[in-house]
Length: 231
Image (tube, rainbow, N blue to C red):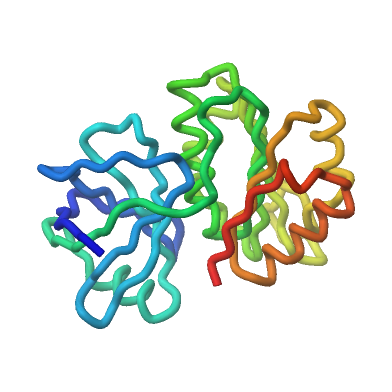
């Protein structure tokens, strides 16, 4: 696989264990569709696919969001410093936003598995501002609410609806969001409101399996469901 070097220009601390890394396109810009991932080569022993969390309309920079977990994630999170360079391959993956449509979008993910949702939203904000997006974001801890400040701002000024669910049995102090998990009734209501709604799911195998079963119970057509399983 052909790769090219890209230089890290900025690091953003998103949550206590998640960072966004902003790279300069430099002399090798690449085109991509929101939702695609790239293979990042930290060194000869550490390579992994990472979803692009920025929008294709950004001409100078692209963003990757990484959780400090697993061998690669921990190495990347701990080692990368502004000015460092990594080798990256061409974008790939099937969890791609249908950019030729204005159909409503529903994105479902847990904890740090929503970088594609950010890419979707920023693309739509610039290119399709009238297009509606709903984000169901499940978290296992309040500290895992990703891109919270950004999304809070746009919830008030754009067609974005965000539903944050804390997957715990009891409500901790200071938590004002929902409790539990995404239900068939939640997704079915979006489908009944507009049968053209497209449902996108990304995450680790257990979560993806649960969401697929939820969508099946809600009688969402398979042709309206797009899935990216991270493991």
